[in-house]
Amino acid sequence: MASTVILVPELTISTLNPAVALANVGVAVTGNRISATGNPGTLKSRFGEAELIELPNCLLSPGFVNAHQHGRGLSQIQLGYHDDFLELWIHNRRARGPLDPYPVTKLAAVNMVANGVTATIHANYSYGSGDYEGELRAALRAYDEVGIRVTMCVGAMDRGSVVYPPHEACFMRDLPLELRDWVTAPRPLAYAGDGSATVGLMSRLLSDFAGHPRIRLCYGPAGPQWVSDALLSHLVRDAERRDLGLHLHALESPAQAAAAAEIFPGGAFAHLEAMGALTPRTVLAHGVWVAKADIEILARNRAIIVRNAGCNLRLRNGIAPVAAYLQHGVRVAVGTDNAALADDEDLLKELRLVQQLAKVPDWNAPASSPTTEDLLAMAITNGVAAAQLDGSIGVIEVGAKADLIAISLDAVRSPYLDEDMRILEALFARAQGTDVRMTMVDGRILYRNGVHLTVDCNEIHAKAAEAAKLARVSSDRDARVRTPQFASAIKDHYRTHGHPHPPAQPR
Image (cartoon, rainbow, N blue to C red):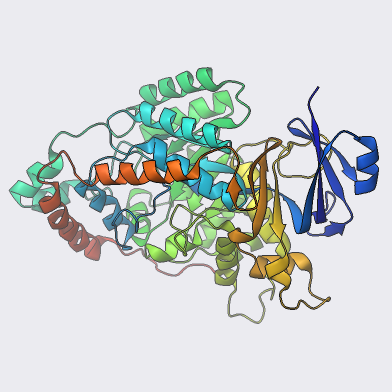
């Protein structure tokens, strides 16, 4: 018989109203599920042999969901890449060799766990090793060993690897011959290949991970400008057949918006809708450069937007119109994209940034938007939906999966907090990831009081650093010289073709 632990916090998020924190409510966990809630004394009497875990001055909450990241436990700064336009950052990676995905993903996972994240979406990403399936399996092994819940996106991409269409041919024609030869030289395949190859890879992974308690799979076509209609339609059909999600980057940067306006004259989201790619199972990361009509399409199809506020600022992509999304009833989740403003995996600080950037200078706009309820939905409810997880996750109620976190309220209240201030409002205004005191996933405590209980963090850090050092040297001897030349050509190209029209965005 599974053993029971009783969690005794100061406050517990209410089942009936998540925006309310209840005092004197304990939670019993048996196996991987919540077996009872209620008065701690009553729970102690009912489960006499249970282990008692006191969580003084803590709020007990469902775990957070980082709804868009790529398993990059070492940030671009740590790896030697400067913050700049997204398109330059992507191409500057050519100067170095591929990273080993296993240690860096494992580092990302433990960093998220320490910040109260119990589930995450690993968006499409290729290290360019030529063994994409091996990369996915290595990342899945890392998440599994740490114990975090993950939805893995099986990525796909078949165009736009140099510059966004429809300008690839012109761009290549104008490159100096030596640089053109270098760019077009044979390179390892980034993803599985065409639609059939990608579906085949999905079939193998689904077979191998069927029934896994913490791993789900979805399709991750890179984005509308990176994926042809033929490839996307192939994945859309298979996703519908298997009831899988789709997770895309969409209208992230000014250059992407400019390209989309040329590729899809009727609008990128209208095109996705016509292809059947927008459903309640569709997740779109970023959504920065959108018009009112785009927002209405997203709302109509119940698609989910993932806000990546810090990353969008750092890579000069702009500010997504979260206030307009909320006004139109679009579900919004939150992610770090492994490029949070503070260069960490602190989802609480990113939520605070999302909230502040969404406040519009308009006396007719709601003063408190996004509300505390909105932030909770971003961090938990909508994140659960984005990760294609079921209703047994993200709530504190009997029978639910025990994905729980305890957040200390000491710093939130210190040295004083007025009694008229709602504690959850104060928490989102003041708390940080360092205030997390416990992270439990599937009934198993992974992290408590600053210590990871299931893995050796020193070893993880050392192996991630070793992988980064090995990747400093590319097997391409010309890469260090050619990459800056190529970046200069990219910059010149987007100075002309990287401006969306019209530039106005809804607020």
